[in-house]
View 1 (cartoon, rainbow, N blue to C red):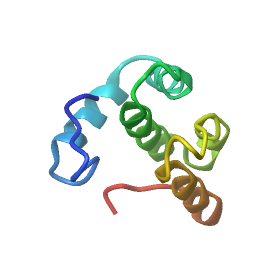
View 2 (tube, one colour; view 1 turned 180 degrees about the vertical axis):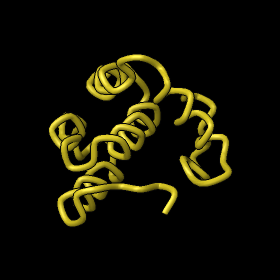
View 3 (cartoon, one colour; view 1 turned 30 degrees about the vertical axis):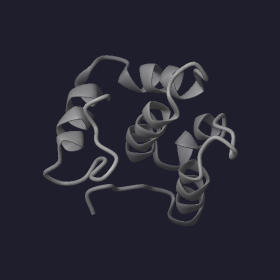
Length: 94
């Protein structure tokens, strides 16, 4: 996830898209992503990138794990959770 850049994140044609596909192809990837998200020792950007991939694949069901990131740590995660509550899915490519 260190290859994902903050400007393009996970978008069509970005390096982040390639990273997302590779990560999702790993067995039990969602379980690993959830561990990354919950681990406060990880850099917040890595936790946010893991959150994007998790939200993309789990939709509204990812909210409990996303909520483990404190609002004071990230302005982005509360916005992502609001989006999931409103639309029930997240599609970084759409």
